[in-house]
Length: 212
Length: 321
Image 1 (cartoon, rainbow over the protein chains, first blue to last red):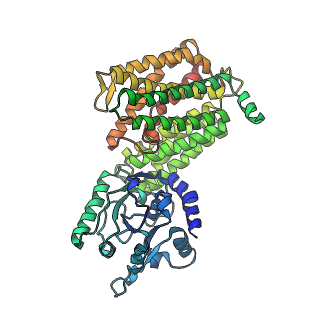
Image 2: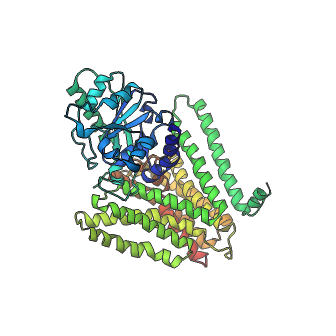
Image 3: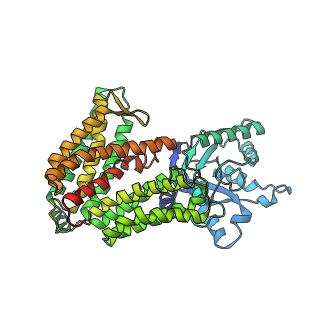
């Protein structure tokens, strides 16, 4: 069904995303076309995922899989079908975190199989302004798959197109800023600090597409 | 083949020559950029090349629409206004509570263009300046956030009038009936507005590059000079005076008024939008057009020249408006 996913994303979702957001991207050439790779972005809206998938160079698109909450995106029916077939999610059972279950196992497997996994380490959608605390699961993944580069990405403005709890999407320009990749160096705290700094750097460079 | 021949045979000869002239000019520009690295091997001409490549696309879209008629021009300007408005409202200070007001601005845009489709100039003229002007603040009041209320209403008005109402005049020009004495049809009117405005931008830039010394508005646009402004004014003024009669029904005083004021309006639009961008803290309004920046960066002078051009034509020559 990969051909179907590509068809929908490139021919339908891409034009719609461009109309709604302008979809400007800075540093597109830094997006990896081959896995394993970890894309790490801030999160304010479902538009974030759509934006990443529609902006991704077609040559790497088949490999891009967003890690997403299983309790939300696989609750059955149309949403499960859409999450699996079109978005191509890697399910994360976040409700089982802390119970001894290795919730990151599917993500690790995807990476080892050569996928490019998109991760929102805030764990949930924020208000589109400040980034909340980053969960350290991304550091565990980087440690387990050290050959995967970690690419920090700042998504500016998507929270305005469709905020958490919103139903009507409003056209507003968004900008995607792709940073330089970082690699696992062996220290979890240092890795998380570095990642956060990189994301904040990109945030500082983003155009003022934010609420006054 | 016959349909293609018939399509072009139905067009005004002046318009076809005009479009040919623009293409010849652009080809010349390509030839110059191909030669530049030989004269100045160390220079980087990537931006110039991008700019010219983008011009091909912009001219193809506009020329195609002009040849196809008012429906295509209106559709194209709906898209242009939509993108300009989206760029403006995404960068200007708009509050979280105004999210649905942004949507209302897009609805106002569609209604504005609907009046062009049904060819109702009376409604077009009053809808945005009077009724959208009143309704937007009322809707904002209903939402209830009073912090920065007045400033935000101004932001919305500025965005809607420049990006929608003023640019819409260009599409309305296409509704000029064939019964008027038009030397190159309604499309000729629009074509000449676009040529004069963009020629003014280019002429100001070239005069400024060649002879610019004295800064004209240093706090807003440090690269703009008196030499660029005056040189552009003279060049565009002469262009309008000598070429204007080929495409417009203007002559004598009407033509002189256009020649004098259109270059000033183009300059004013450029500088005023620059002041807004400086206030917001951005250089470009988006990255839509490679080498140029956003759509609003390209259309800034047009938001000032379009209504002026329309009104000068309406006052001196067109019975319809």
